[in-house]
Length: 251
Ligand SMILES: Nc1ncnc2c1ncn2[C@@H]1O[C@H](COP(=O)(O)OP(=O)(O)OP(=O)(O)O)[C@@H](O)[C@H]1O
Image 1 (tube, rainbow, N blue to C red):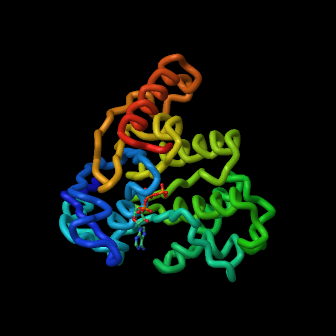
Image 2: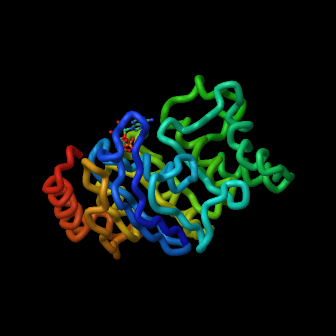
């Protein structure tokens, strides 16, 4: 379980009276997917970095299963907006990187990496370097790396944003398949209302200036492929879009 408690965060260039995040709290139960949505600049990436332990909050704390985040002891899969691929390593090496850093490269890991490459449509690209890939392919490499690590928690910052609409929907299904197999506790930042509705069992809507949690919305439609084209799905999407707009979002 992930618990963020009363997080207040400012970057050094901003004054203490003008934090990026102000008193942000959220809880993600073990094995759940939480989608975070909100206007550009409201602090979604900052929140993810704080939860990953990459930025220390000025106030508040983050607990994983009741203990402070310790990336050395827990496996935290963090997929940043720029994918975090090492340009001098091939696709295969990039996918194995997280496991290599944990000293967990075995024959089984390599087989699993191959399976993920198949699953994510990366077969035949294993020897290429990131500069030789499209943005969407780079995103898929980052996704494969995150899943190969079998993290305790997965933090994804707009993981499918570089993909065209059709591929994005396919990758959302790939994510759901992998998530159903593993039950990884996940926080996903997105600016797509439909993505939040399709993937997030809970949707955290943030508002800006300063970044706060405007509301936490339970979402019974999450993961239900058969509902994706339903009237209810569209109606909920419209409603969520309106609430975001009313909250000052430039979606
Ligand atoms: N390293 C930094 N130093 C100073 N200010 C920063 C830094 N990183 C982000 N910010 C500022 O903090 C605020 C929140 O940024 P953040 O990237 O967390 O927002 P976001 O909601 O993820 O935005 P987007 O949806 O556009 O990716 C913005 O005003 C941004 O300019």
